Structures are given as structure tokens and as C-alpha cells.
Amino acid sequence: MATAVNRSGRRLSRRAFLASAGAAAVVSPRAAFATAPLAFWGPPAAPSIVLAHAVASGAMKDIAPAATFRTWRTPDEMRAGLSSGAMQAVIVPSNVAANLYNRWLGIHLLNVMTRGLLYVVAGAGIAGVGDLAAKKVAVPFRNDMPDFILRRLLAGAGLKPGKDLHCDYAGTPPEAMQMLLAGRVDAALLAEPAATAAILRAKLSLMQLTRAIDCQKEWAKIAGGSAFIPQAGLAVTRAFADRIGRDGLTSIQNALQAAVRFVIDHPLRASLPSALELGAMSPIIAEAVPYSNLAALTASSVRPELESFFSTLAEDDPRIINGKLPDQAFYAL
Image 1 (cartoon, helix red, strand yellow):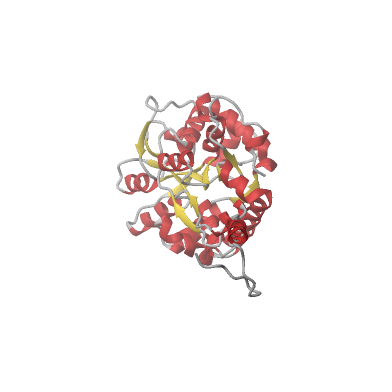
Image 2: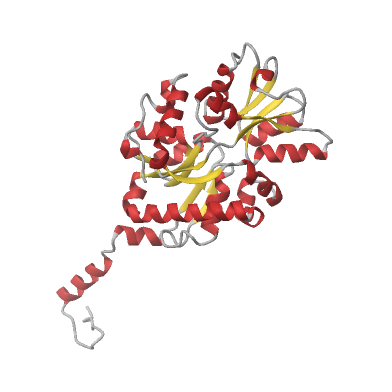
């Protein structure tokens, strides 16, 4: 074996060489993680505009220099990714984060990224929840957030799906939008930017669609308070949070707060990084921004609103949050 030589030209013994090599190989977990590729995941909905812009702008470079943004397409894909650890930082419906946390899967909520972005899009003759009686409504993601919210709104109006109206479930928001544009349903429950896309595409066919029902305002009528639905936020795995530490989480939160301001002030420019992943043209995404109620509120700062929201959803089925409100440790910041 050749004898190693250090920078000063002095020869190193085999023992000294192995010791120095071992020390060089010991890198802190946070430093190693900072150099590893990381994907930030978001839904096919408006909060992803903020996350995609934050990644593309380089605001995440101190945490993950090679960070990318990707979109999950279905709640099942998202749950599987979080449960397996394949997804470590993901925008999710807030109740999903609570459910997974209560199932001891090490999922924590960093923030809330929208005050609500759901609308019932329809033509003339529908202006309130009560007008959905005897109608067909396309609803994406059965037994997930949009469906849960609609059920509570219908119950508040004294309507029961399957009896007073028909909910036609779709696998994805684009599918629900296509059902509406094809005339197969009278209305569609859509999150932004799908609601904007449906309205603009209808104009090309000389159809008139509007955001007939603002679900945020209707929620305030049944739950009290302001028109605020803490619908989705960035969830992180326990392993991710431990490796970047509280300072790293704070850096991500600060980047997202800055990104929200940029998206609101410059919607067209901010739409570019997310357009391909969301499958929508930049002008459509930009037009959806004012209706998306975007935010980056630390989860702990809106804990009362989250708990009120969870409690209202759980009135229908406690399994939505796995039977209980999450405790303080659920709130990453």
C-alpha cells in the first residue's frame, strides 16, 4: 500500500490516514440533506403556484439547492407518497395532514396556503346552495376535501346527496370540468385554477358560466366567523423536519411568504413555473390568482381556525381526522 502524504508534504501513517478519511466522511445530516435533490410537491390547485414560484426563484436554495417542483394528481398518490416517505414536503388538504398525524405517521403541518378556493361553477339558474336541488353536480375526489365541504354546505341547506340532488363523482378536477362543459351535469365543484379555466373555456363555445356559489362565503354561514376555509397547507415529514431543523422550516416559511406577495403582485410572471405541471396556460393561472385567497400562514397562528374546521368536518364522520383533534406537536411552526 502506498503511503499517503498530507498537504505539507509530511508522510501519514496508515492509522492516521484512515482516521482523517473517516472524519472527512462524517458529514452532518443537515449538510448532507441540503445537497441532496428534493422535490416539493403540490396539488393541481392554486397553492402550487406559490410553491412552484418559490422553488423556481431559488428561494429554497439554502435548504435544497437542487429543489424541484412536482404535482401530485390524486389524493391516493399523495397519501402513498407521504406514508412511504417518497414525498417529504407536500401541499395537502389540511384534514389529510391531521389524519396522518393522528395515525402516528409523522406528518406535521407547517402552514396554511389558502383561505379557501372552492367554487360551484354553473350557468344561469343557480345562485345559492339551495338551487342545487334536483340538479346534477360534478364533484372531484370522492370522500376527500372538496366532497366533505360540499356535503356540509348541502346539509346546511337541508339537501341530501342521492335524494335531493345527484353528485356525479369525477377522478380529477379536469374531468369534472369536462363533464360541465359537455353538458353532462348542471354544475361542477371546482378549485382554482380549474374554476377559472372552465369559465374561460365555456366562452369559446358561447356558453355562460360563472362562480355561482362561493363556498368560502357559504361556509361562514354554517360555521360562523369569516369566509375562511383553512383548506390546504404544506405538510412535512418528521424526518424532513428533524434534518433541516426549526431554522430550515422557518426559511421555507419565509420563502413562501415572499412568494405569496410576488404571486399576488405579479400573477402572470409568477404563473410561468407552474403552468406545465398544472396543465393550464399562464393567462388562465394568472386570472385565477385573485379568486384563490392565497396565503402562507404558520399553522400554529391559525390553530383555532383549523380546529374549528376539523371539528365541523368531523361532525359527519370523525374518521376524517382519525377521531380527534391533533395536539400541539402537529403544528411544525
